[in-house]
Length: 289
Image (cartoon, rainbow, N blue to C red; front, side):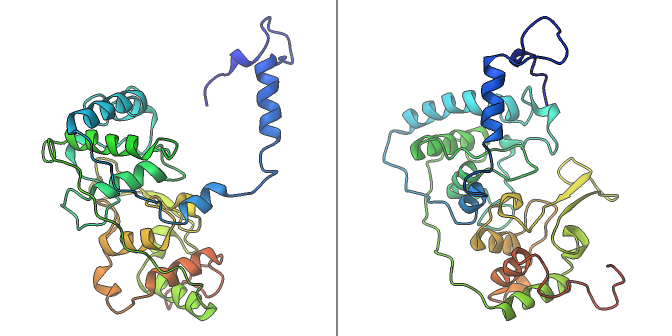
């Protein structure tokens, strides 16, 4: 939180007296929360629209992406995309090294460079509460595609490649029964989710005593109870991608056990969003409250 002396009248009077900008900001802050709540959560709870990029010469798209990257991304990710921008030291977890071409939130197995739609989705949604990557949904879709292409060019493995676009499958949206919510609680306990994400999915941070994960010894297990804090997105489809493919080096894949539990993602989310109160998520013999 930086100093905001520019919002107060000069002179050092106590208590400080706000100027016109300061008063306007206070009025705006006092008006927050009076309309619809959790609008951003509603936005993150559904899969974002990913339109196909319009045909355009690659050089023109790259130049647009370069200008957008300089305006919005350099402070964190650095000019070379190595995660060493001027603001990087202020951020925890640190910005991603885009030059490596490896991304956490993807729809393909680990080791694959990922789909361009995955990068478009991250630009659209951001990475949620507790992370510094904001949503860039305010940019035109073609601008976001230009950023995707420029980010691809930062990594040697994908430099010079054209955009690859594949429409994402539609996820089921029908309501789920309370019995299925209880099944989600049992799965949460049986799969060991409690160990990282807490008894009710509230998330936590802990120090990895073995090897630092992605250069950071602190493991950040997301709060799964709210769409804004699920880093890969708040939809059922995003949750299933994370379960099936894992997330970075810290979250393993549950693909093997998902084969016998086709509705597991919906059941787990339903249990978490119900306040984790439909059934206890404690393994047998657990003495945790």
